[in-house]
Length: 263
Ligand SMILES: O=C1O[C@H](COP(=O)(O)O)[C@@H](O)[C@H](O)[C@H]1O
Image (cartoon, rainbow, N blue to C red):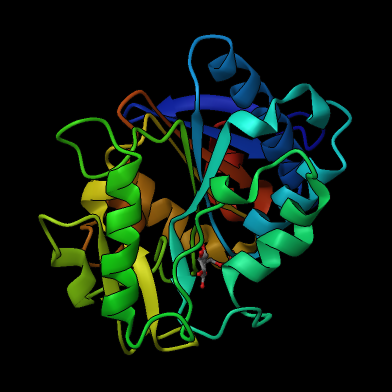
């Protein structure tokens, strides 16, 4: 395939867009976010966006911070949430919140502090479960009547080489949690072991889910997820938005898909 232009093709009602490399992917995700925010703000407010940690997720936020159209967005009408968090002390450099603040939030003077909704840290909650319960309460405050969470306008998800999304890891009990939007996680195979995550049910409330992944080490998980692997083995296989599901990947993560299905 051409490595100069993104290409798109539908698969199982998901749109897969392949980008030349991780750097271009991050820039493209930032551009999509700006466009999505502007589109939504033209019809309703506030806009609810769920951020992800991870390599491409944070690189995309950094790209958004320097995007030329960034200030076209009315940031006073944007609420930011997280799909998962490492259960560490506030300000720890490994927290997704800390990395997002460094990459983007600290560069958005218009964004009201009360619109930023980090998952409670290990110095604000005694356990991941306590943090998860507090986050569920905050989500409910911003949800439509009768719902547990807002209808997120965009929910970003990075994906690990094992196919995990948010902190929903293969074979973990968090995959089976029902009836609540958040869960505490213990024994994560990726450090740190204690985390907080949105559940599949909460993710499924998003209007748009965007899975972002780059690098050859992600190719087997991308293939498994798009090939319909069981969620227990490849959690990323089970995520979808109510209106749209995008897989935004680079050539390396696309693997055989990039070769077999030229633009
Ligand atoms: O630990 C996490 O990892 C995933 C993926 O990270 P990556 O560096 O392999 O892209 C991320 O999506 C998740 O939010 C984070 O907590």
